[in-house]
Image (spheres, rainbow over the protein chains, first blue to last red):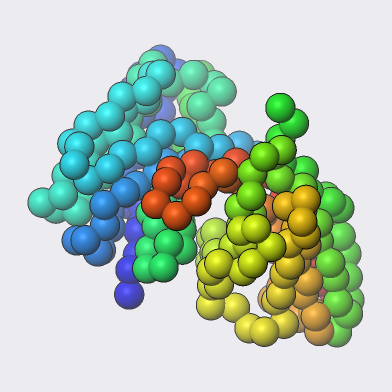
Length: 111
Length: 115
């Protein structure tokens, strides 16, 4: 079946460094991906999305890269700050528009 | 604009009981989706309602049901609770009709504990 998954459950990054969170997907027909951030005690928050006709999309301090050849996408966070500490999910609309979420990567910021 | 609100925030129930959770979407949003979040299974889609009609349903047993009212507020019900139903239940609203952006706004969730 369809699935999206993150490579690492936990990632620790020094404050000020760049963070890269990876995600793989299985359905080569997937054409839309979303990244969410979930802080402790809160619901997920939309960060950025990308359609398959793009390789890269930039937001405020975040960049998403999509490599359709290897079915991989990544979320890059520039100059990581303590407020970036959260669980990050990639997600895609599966069959019948049901949103499928990956398991999530917990980002720890080291002082 | 007020965000998505969910009530109650925390709930403790006993096996065999039933529970109703409530979600008020962002004003003007007609789509409400429900998700179950557990450490083992992650975020799993339960169902989506749009203009009072269930538009989509995930792979959950019939004990899980929902509805949406004319003001777009939604409720979900779980009957005959099992220990495995302990989870964070999240509601998300969006303005989307089919084919438009999937940008959803999540509420803080209801933490359900079944003992």
